[in-house]
Image 1 (tube, one colour):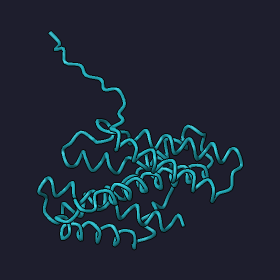
Image 2 (cartoon, one colour):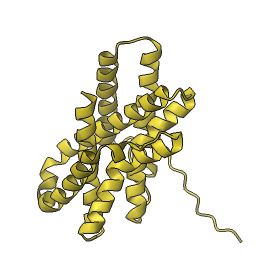
Image 3 (cartoon, one colour):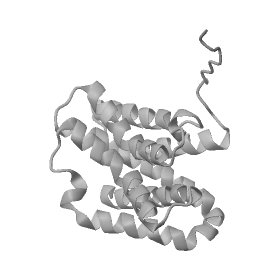
Length: 204
């Protein structure tokens, strides 16, 4: 079950990366790089941070093929993507939740403290998008638009709470995915945002 969701997640994130590259008018190599970084960058940063070697995708080259194929396929179907906007947002939300839960699971298996487990989940969930936006010369979406990192934090805390309460794995996954995706979609629908800090005064 988790493997299927993970494959959906990396495919969706690769497509979002390819679309971001397209908006910056990158060539095919640029599209492939941005798709790869968006889909697999979060897990890579997590593994390096936690010292979890070998890094996941190096042991599963099929993930690389899936990501690159999804990114390049996006260049062919991009003109039709607006018709699938809601489906794409749903897949992206599933990816965020899946990456967050996977990050927590790996840190727990390595017996890290709870705060590190939560950070691991968030790193996995949002780092790919941050790297995508930085490479595309944009302020990362997670720092300026609707709730995204907050959803990852919520999912991580909910996952750990249910584990602590001894809830079964299947129920835990269903609740995390249901609540996490609903939270993300509601944030988009109603434009929920964190308070913005704006400082314009110049130093003399």
